[in-house]
Length: 220
Image (cartoon, rainbow, N blue to C red; front, side):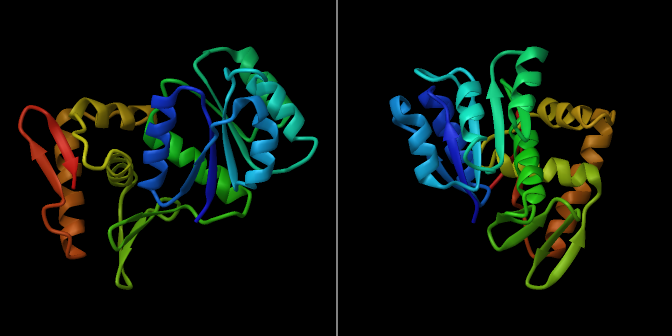
């Protein structure tokens, strides 16, 4: 289980990230002492650092620059700024990736998985109940039985998983697919949901995706 250090001074956002990571098989560590952020990060020895640029005392870019003098731990920068300058500075200081707030939880998880995979820390696998979700291979597995998902089915399922027990609107799901540079209309989404449910039933998972009338879907 990969240990991910959350360096975020907004408590609500930090707790949301903590819950998201816990629900997807990671072990989150939330930084609390920003006066000694550098030492706290070093001492925690995380597998990956999720580092906000705008934090108190020592800003994220300076921490990134200092960390890169000591460790090679993967670092993903997070910021509310939509600035190419911040992105360029982060990459030049040694960040492995960069994501801007407000971020898509599904895209964030995919990026974290990709960075960890590149660093040979863990495989790109999410866990749901007794189901293994291998995003890289596009397969889901249970009791040594493996089912292949299409790219869109995997995007839909991983987004629902990232928001487990929360209602996800159809608009959110279609936006997720559009962000993947693939256009999908309302009818196509219905077909993809139906096929995904059928494949999950083949693995013995009945009625885990509920339709909430006029609201969307929820993964139980």
